[in-house]
Image 1 (cartoon, one colour):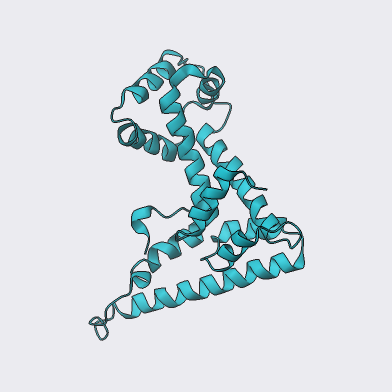
Image 2: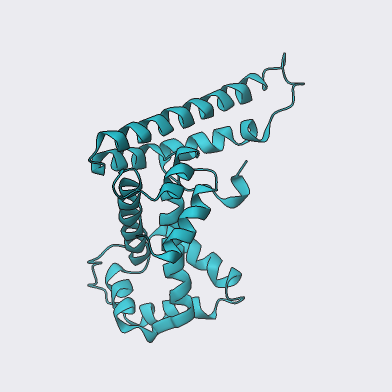
Length: 217
């Protein structure tokens, strides 16, 4: 059984455009950063992981800067964190662990793929989530491959591949129409929201990146 908070997130992710596993992993990384900004250096083990990593990767550093202003209204927490890191700098320091926010995202990603495996198995399926997934836009390329590698029953593989084939075919149609309507001969034809977002969704599908809310069709 999926924890209730995770279930809520899955339902929201399955109701959004794009790969739900990408979205959930991204949210887990952001949650780590928000919690860090709120709690500061209160958790010594967390700070130790950040120090051993030499801070955060470039992507999560950008999110950290943005979240400091958006979620907390100021940048003092961020300034304190980097002040602590700066005080601990040593010319001989070599990072010995990965970005902690990336680790949090990877942990959630693994749990999410295990959940997909479970709902696509007839003995352990959450029928509601299974139906939502089957009606959705599927996974990105890398998460489709990862899910296929952990699903152990033929029915689950069939459902997964059917969902992906239908989703990618629909995306391909939207993208072809988007490109066709850029031809001057057809440029007066209105583009649907799905066609307008098709190129963004195609990039996300192939690259395995979560769509931003503002990018949704």
